[in-house]
Length: 92
Image 1 (tube, rainbow, N blue to C red):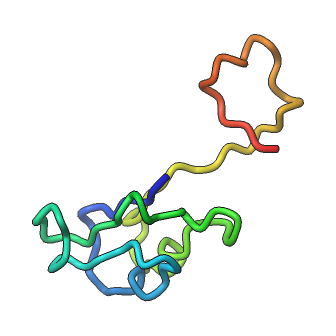
Image 2: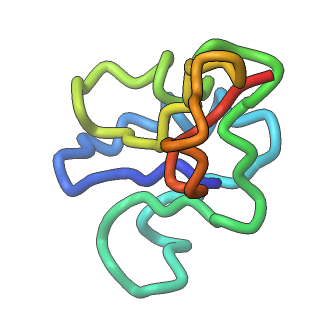
Image 3: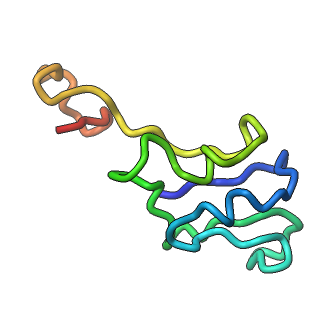
């Protein structure tokens, strides 16, 4: 799991300040050499269990700049045998 920062980032730094695990670096420290902010996927926890959405996304002033995989909202009881193929996210 990891958030991604898209190329519409305005480099305001809000996401860096809000990341609780210091997974975000600015364009000077991007390991890919790209001129955009970068999220280390092995450090990012998407703030699961702490916030409804990643803290960086809440702090970001640019709509659509920070993207992530939404956690599924379907409960186990709502999934019949025909949907148990491993491709449907399940909570609880």
